Image (cartoon, rainbow, N blue to C red; front, top):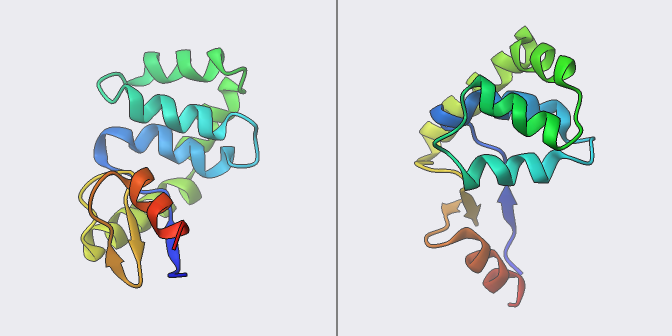
Length: 115
């Protein structure tokens, strides 16, 4: 089976939320928050992000603190630059055998997994 990697990648419109996601991965709300960002990319400004955090029962103070911390901001910048260098143009994105996956990522990953 080919190896495939799925990683977070901060496109410009989602950067504020993704910064929080780097720390939220250990919380139950990680995927729900991530999916809500992808489902509604037009509403990723602060008031809408705060609503998402509160609706998922996550810690709003931690959200604010984490997404603005120097370490998280630097990691997002590093991941963003790395993604641009690798040819990532959208999120979610995936790679297998060192090449970008084309098409709807979920479908492509299921196809790879079935091989």
